[in-house]
Structure formats: structure tokens, C-alpha cells
Length: 202
Image (tube, rainbow, N blue to C red):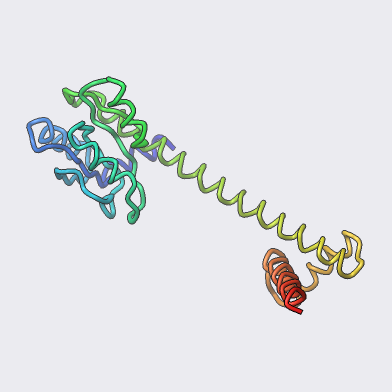
């Protein structure tokens, strides 16, 4: 995976959010030397730049409010974030943590270590994204299991079936209607809730 990430650095879309000074110019130059496609801007944008893989963000205390606004923004997918810091005081570290940065570049910015930071940050970000996907998939699966269990309980109580018979009933109905068991369970739950609602009205 690391070798692939190193290959992917060429053509990586990097957005440098940093005051327009010599350090930014050198940072942009070195990133382009690595093979990245780089855009730079200042002040801090209000939303994450579209189509960007990595954002390198200068953590400046006088724009803390703007940084926090960016962090809370919706819209474009959150890119890999690398923070640029001048100090290691508690307030700076707090802002770096709030930002969710996966790597930190210290000032004065030097070319040495930039490739390492970029590679590690990208690797951690990709791992985090895959982990999040797996968690969401497991959560959906668990929700489906819980819905099927609830639908079985409804059939067991309403039709006097045992657990195996209730499961088989859901499975057969799902097959006949060509839907998933989860969808069938949801339909049974919805129908039961509707019947209970009408019973209360009567």
C-alpha cells in the first residue's frame, strides 16, 4: 500500500492555505518538485476546496475563528489535512487536534521531511476512511439484523409462529417479492405500526 501511495503522490491535488510569503513559495515549489498539482490561497476559505486530495493549513491564532468555521463546513468531502505550526503551545495543539490533522509541519518549513509527512498523512487518512466505511457497513448490517429480529417477534406474537417459522416466513415473502429480507422486515414493522395506530384511533 505504501508503494502505491508514493506512486500516487505524483498528480496529487494539494491546496496550500498559507499566508503569501517566502515559506509558502518554497513549500509550493517543493510540492511541485515531488509531482503534486498545487494551488495556494490566503485567507482561510469558508469551505473545503472541491476536488482536493490534501490541504496544508497554516494554523494562525489570528484566524482561529476562520479555521473553526472551515472545520464545521459541509459540502466537499473532507480531504487529508496537514497542519503548519510555529509554536507547540497548548492553544496551538488544541487547534491542531480540533482540525483533525493527520500530520504536522513545523516552521521554518524545510524540504526535508515533507515527502515523509505527505506519505504518512495520506496513508493514515486512507486507513481512517476505510475503517469508517467498514464501521458504517457493520452498523447497517447490525441494524438489518435488529429489524429482522423485530419482524420475527411481530410474526411470533401475531401469528403464533415459533422463531424458525417466523424467519422462514420473512424469507419466503422476501423471495416472492424479490426484495431483501431487511426490506421485508421493514415492511412488516411498518405494517404493524400502521395497524397499531389505526387500533388506537378506533
